[in-house]
Amino acid sequence: MSDIWRRYFIAWSTMTISSSVLPIRRAKRGTSIVWGIDAMFPNLEVRHLHAVDVLAEELNFTRAADRLNITQSALSKQIAEIEEHRRFHLFIRRHKRNVELTQVGRLFVEEARSALLHIDRAIQLGREGSDSILTVGHSPDTDQAWVSAVLATRLPLYPKLRIQLVSDFSSELVRSVMADELNLALVTAPPDNSQITAATFAETHLYAALPQTHAAAQKELIALQDLARDEWILFARRVHPAIHDAILDASRREGVSPKRTHDIITAQQAVHLVSEHVGVAILTKPTTVGSNAEGVVLRPLSDRSLRFDACLIMRAGDNSRLAEEFARSFLRRFQPQIALPKQLELSLPA
Image (cartoon, rainbow, N blue to C red; front, side):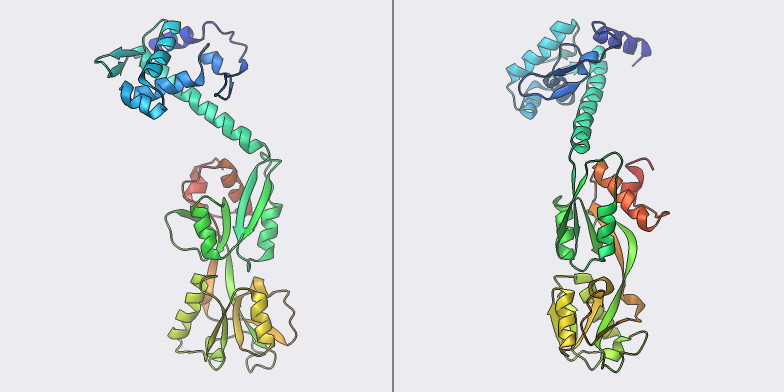
């Protein structure tokens, strides 16, 4: 469309409004507060803009009315109100229900859509700038330093931000993120799933919890072969599917078959069983640090295949500015030069 038409349209649609004032008005019952909309579309309500936008997409009164959940006569009346008040035609009636946009109509629709986007953005920012709550999940065995980093993350644009923590098994955390029940989650070895975006911020190592009297207790590194004669105490598969399966896969590769395995839910259970000489436990270090059970020692495993990425995950396609800003700030606490996933890299300016 030519610049002449654009200048004509904008001048016409704003000629009754002072250029130095952008009024704030409260819309009628059933609509929202609108900032500055009168400056571009005087005496129009948001419902008018929505009506024009939808009719411009459908070019059919029946389909547009269905989308708006109003009658065709109500839609026709709204379009007529705009055209009569502005004294120009937005649509040409080709048939009883079908329409085409006029030149002025095309310009009007372009500006109306821009106004609607600004309204939606203003409402979103208003909500996020108030008492915003970000829900972050973590598993019970998560390194408490990571949880502290979550709680310590501050965002200047969201001074009233509150963090709500949720503890659950890693598989449930992934499901909750995909279902939009959690904004973010700290997950070790998340599955490769197109519905989530994962950014690695640390590496999780596995450790063996041994009785002090164990033959390998004095070694600096423990191999699975060192545990071949023991009963193994492991996280149940539903707690950590990736870690549980990786341990058993590694034992098969090494030709090691534990005498028996015991499934546990928490590290405290595992350490207690080790102190009772039930067997040896294979755990992530964060769960066992601080568990000063008498007669139990910790030693790192030597198998490099039993190291896992600790990731911050969010739902793929989540366009929440708050969640993305928080993810950026959290990740940079661990790696200032971290390579962000595309979702975090492109959605917001660095």
